[in-house]
Structure formats: structure tokens, C-alpha cells
Image (tube, rainbow, N blue to C red; front, side, top):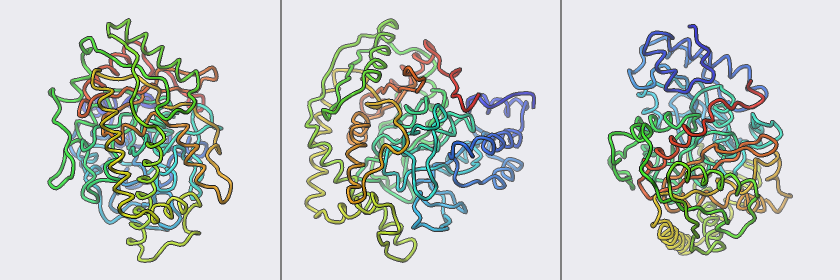
Length: 476
């Protein structure tokens, strides 16, 4: 093979295989070499599946659009039969999955070769990837900073060039947060766009969405083409795409759009000027590209949103630990999980059924208010995060006050959870850097079911101000 594949996106890597300029095994060997070189510094990959990947790459792979392209799975929700599965909790021990999720089967039918599993905070709780079991994943742009979470291992792997694309999921921003921190494109699709079968109907009353982190917009679109669609019995189904494919939406510029711009935190928390600047610069670029940009506000009670979101989050984590208890056949005790996890589980277990349903109802009411505020616009520009990537350890909390970590997380991520509640698609684009060279993402959100507007606009912005040439210092 006469190609350096490190910074090629998944689409170009697949083209090498299709054109017989590289074999799947060559691509996989190169990816494994990069993981072995970079992972001791970054700690992105926690379970290596190298022998399995080489065997699959040397065999008969499905003739999908990404045949032979190396890929990584986040070690959260998306189980792979025969592979370790822990969700970063020590309680899981040496658990090995006995099934593969439908999404993982679709990745494999698309031709991806899974080379390993990536780090995540315990049970995906925090917007940083610093689990006690596996240790912190470090940001390739500055190894003293967070990668974000909970898909931080996947983000570090893609940003550093280990692989071109990696799986992530998003219950409060967990694809978009690490995309912003690591300078990637990260799309959270519409609720129901990607199935959670067969293991789950939904997660946390519809908060959790599955997809990937990539360096290019076209990769994200093409992977969504390969993986979207409900299975019989799913509780949600997203509207059918308007056009021929999601990838097709990236191939031409959108018509002139009416874009809202929002830079004030919907919860009233402080937003760093650099995050506001990133949105304003992107809005100015959109105007130069022929779009109409107007200020907007969201008419929702921020305090109520945080209260009810935390209730739902706590209940979800109580369920998650209960799931592990059922798999392992024993009850967890406080020492089995991190103190924050236990605090959230206790809160979740303390909620009465009527309190939980009241929180769900309140979030649904807020969801309608958010959707109504956005209805006049084709899409909305807003910060992904309220701060640049923060130092590792920022979310540590004093013993006995672990819930403070959740409150700190809320000030870091006031802009992402609302789209998990509404179910609308939203993406983080790597549009800006701060004075220290740290990535600053800009979020684009659209109406329910309208990933195509996001993908079309994102691809137009990518062509206008390309980002693929920007590589972090730890990955020259």
C-alpha cells in the first residue's frame, strides 16, 4: 500500500479498498499500529480486539460502503458478542457480551472492522472521560485537558488519527461535547433515527441517541445512511429522509436558510466570550454564504429544566446499575461504583413513580416551548459548550458532596441537553479555536427529523472553511 491513511476519512479509506489500492488487512494493521503508538499517551482504547480484527480483515467481509475500514466502539450500550463490556464500572468485572446490538450488526454489515472499544465515564454520567476503573482519557490538543464525555475515548481516537470514525452515543450531549473538545464533527440524530434494539426500546425516556464521531461531514452522513431505521417494536421512529440519502444532502449547498442565533445560556449560566465569538463568526460566515441570520431566544424555565433533567438522569442511572445487577446476579454496594454514581443511583431510587412521571411531563412541556421557539427558523446556531475544554479533574467533587459534579457539569453543558429532551437533531462543528489552540465547537440544531438541513449546511461550512488539515500537537 502506497498511501498514508492516517488523515484520510473513512470514505477515502473505503475507496482505497474498492479500487484495490489497499487491502482491509493493510488498513487494519495501520490503525492498530497507530493505536499502539498513541494510546499509551491518550488512553482512548480500553479493550483491544486486534487479533479478532485482523482475522476478520483477512477474511470475507460484507461488501458494504465501508468495507475494510477500521472502526472503534464506545464501551457503552453498543455490545459486541464475544467482546468485553464494562461501561467503565468496576462492578462489571470481566463481563463478556453474549449478543451484539442491532447497531453493531449494521456497522459490520457496512464493512467496518471493529478494532477495539473506547473509554467512557462510569455509566456515561459525566461530560468528561475520567473513570476510576480505566483512568482519564487525554485530549490530543492538550493532554492536561478533558476530551469531554461521555464519548471521550472515541473522540480522542478520531482526533489523533487512530481511526477515521468511531461510535458514540448521546444522552445529554455525549457526542457533541467531545466533538467540540476534540475538534470533530459530531451529529446527534433525531430520536428514533437509530435503533437501540434488541437490548433496549429506549434509554431514559428517549434521551439517548446513537451515532458516530468523524472528521468529515460526509462520513457522518454516509454512516447514518448505513445504520438508520427502526426495527419492529421500537417505541419511536424518525420521519423518513426527504431526499435520496443523507449523504446526498452533503453534496450541494442548501437554499438560503433562515437561521436563528442564540448565545445566552438557556439555564442562565455564564458563557465564555470565546464560545460566543465562535457562534458569531460562524453566523457571519453563514451570512456571507447567503443565509439570513436573526437573534432568537428560548422561552423555557431553565431552573425547572435542570431540576427535572437531573431527576430523569438519576432515575436512568438507577436503572443502569439495576441492569448490571441483573446481569451479574448480585446487588451492588457503595464500593462497587464511584461515589457520584452511587449518589445518583440513590437519588433515582428515592424518587416516587409520580415524581418521575411529573419530571417527564415537565420536560415534555419544556420541549414544546423549545420547539416553538425554534419553529420560525430552518436551523439554529448556538454554542456547543459554555467553556473551552476544561482541565482534567474539573469535575472532581469533595467526598460527601459528589452531586456538585452534576451541577458543575450543568454549567459546562447548558446548550446540549435540551435537544436530547426535544429529540431534535443537533451537531457540533469544529469551527473555531481559542488563543491556546483548543477547539471550540459551534452547534447547529434543526427541526425534528431534519438532519438533512444540518448536514447540508455543515458540508457547506466545511467547504467554505475546511478543518480537515488541522491536527493536534500529539498527532503530527
